[in-house]
Length: 274
Image: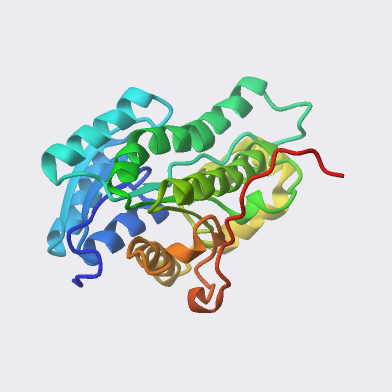
């Protein structure tokens, strides 16, 4: 246990397993009190127990990030149990649908946007107002390299992740203007997670992305602990406030944060380009 985040209160969506679980455990190990959240009670209980066994503080709440009332319940639970949230991490995500844009089910495609993008908006809408009032707070959105390039047959995921990155840029500029609120988009890494399992077992992924399914299968049995820790360490560093100068940037666990240039927040201009 360390004291880097002593006195802070964090909420992590999608923290029942995978990168979200690693982030929640890492934040707790750094001294933060953590609200653990996912849609599955048993996964929440496992994460909370892991944190408690390591000497940390955590409280679990079942929530679906696509429902604003559920996310607001996370705030209520946090404030009643630990105090106002100082660090909000949106990690919940899904990999589907897979296939050409003209064949995928539009409703399922839109459902992916709801988890990734609407979920992020619910987190921002719920937790940032009190951060603005205190002129202090941070939001981390777990995005993906899939949001920085075009990966055919993954439009639902790619569009959602790209939108998350741009949403963070908006929040960073507005949070800077409000004073004291920083936001970051992060790539978690390349480890097998529950999303990986969903991908490997999805018939559409097997049809349209056989190379990716093979890549995931090849990773079965690998030790993922270092990758999970690297992701958690990155979020802990951002949570300390030492890197608020990078607010708005897309960051990865391999980045040298100290060497990265500061973000630039220029005065906005709505004038049309020449």
